[in-house]
Image (cartoon, rainbow, N blue to C red; front, side):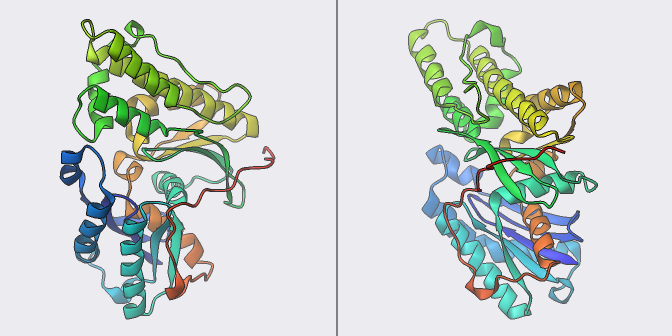
Length: 338
């Protein structure tokens, strides 16, 4: 089965073709990063208008590169929640139009579920149960994937997402947009021990909190104006975020007795995080799956992979499919270990 995936939840317009749910054929991404850089962040109205211009050309380019015609596409999957509502509406409308024109089934995909399926694309032999950390500019969530593939949240941020904290602190350090990648490069030149920054452990909980860390960075910059080494601040900030993400993820995986950890979302492309997670997991006998950077950031391959599992079961949301800006995954009430 060949599935066309469409992703427009934020500022990336992406279309991809995936075969049999695990084999990516092609993924085209039209980024708006340069456009939004002038404002230092994504402007929703601008993002939506750019999706309108780009979504169908991106689909066409994906089909041409894969040398696949509409007759060879068996179904369509599109991100329909959560995200910027205007951006989501554009992707859903395009998917509906193609489903109607080609007479193909259509399924909506939760954006966070898509990030989990990026792990399946990275490791096609991955079998649940496992724990997946989704960490990005908008999300920081620890998700338990049970034996049936059902997903529930073990812990999530109570305030800022990890990527949001990194991006806002990068702006304080006068780094270009998008800040995360620039901050990572700057941190490689710094000494994290020179800047004391807190870690919010939230003992007894799998939840996260990064607002205090952001405040601590702002306070340090205000109080040390004449002796600031930006690279040291970047290294200390990155270290504080990575320490908490790694320790709480590995602890959650051990508590539910799984043998694998996955990482998804834009911040998962951070090499310091991926190396630290792999090392910590290996130390306790747990496998760690981290997709390559193109599968960590918003992409349509993960949406197509997630949609495949619904389509293969004969599901079809049809032309009544709607979009939603907010759609939190359910909390795990109890989790049985393996």
